[in-house]
Image 1 (cartoon, rainbow over the protein chains, first blue to last red):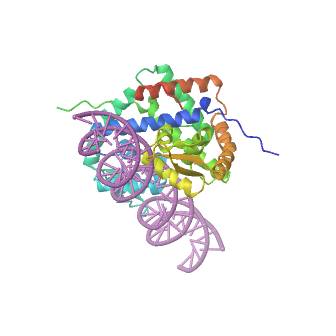
Image 2 (spheres, protein in one colour):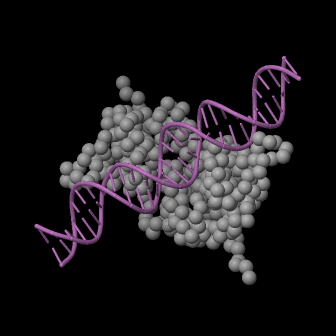
Image 3 (cartoon, each protein chain N blue to C red):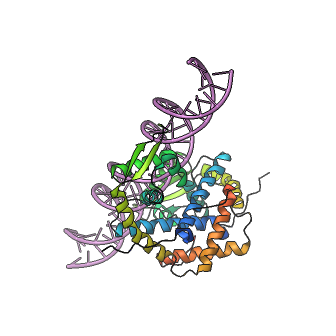
Length: 154
Length: 154
DNA sequence: TAACTATGGTTGCATGTGCAACCTTTTGTT
DNA sequence: AACAAAAGGTTGCACATGCAACCATAGTTA
């Protein structure tokens, strides 16, 4: 007596398509970054952006904002600190936690990433209509909600 | 004289949304896998599927089918070989290349992944209409084409 | 106040990744 | 045939990631 084998129609399932698109997207992001002479990873770039939006975040908050494990974020920060992009300062109120600040160098690099990101985005969305972009984002939000049960935000 | 800073509207750019969705998707994939008692990574699972579809592929082909660097694939295979999921056989025609085969254990594990994947897919797509799924896949194909210049396939 | 629990960060361990250098075998060119 | 160039795999290196164990500090409770 065999257990029924679930049939899975991958070709019409969105998961694999989304995953593959991300892979391609990440590859070309890396490509455009190095073409612009930027020596930092996409992940470091995301951290720079979060700090640019709000300087002095705790590692804690930064980890959850960027959806990473705290250990992963800690190591990311160590590398960024070694490159003088950021500094850690022990918090006054809570000596366990560190506040993270952009350095001048970090801010400089952040601004240098803008044209690369812009270029990447324009390549990616070149022939998409506003409706299509809006529509796909709505669907992706739904998918995220299906997993997390929470309203999605970036 | 300052260079104009490109304005980027992340909130309405599809890139970050796709990337974040993948992150969440991967996280819950891993979750469902371990809940089903499956001790293998998503990446290994993809290799199992490709071999199930077509046994005896060369490492070469497997790397390009799964969009990985040949070195990355080689290491993935080493781990899978250590777990007795696959075996490598030197090719007769071209002694440089290896052909990769599923073992019985590999086939067994592959079948055990089906229900987990099914469950994951159903969670993800629970309230999406067929039109929505079709539409998002079309848009993702467009995006892939914008980067690669080639018609997308899984 | 003392003791237990929770929280923020760091580190060890295992996994996955791309690039570049290297070895071996093929293939292509004089 | 002899040399050069290309192709398949492996390995070193640097990076990113999550989990679990651990340390130090903070908060709670007996």
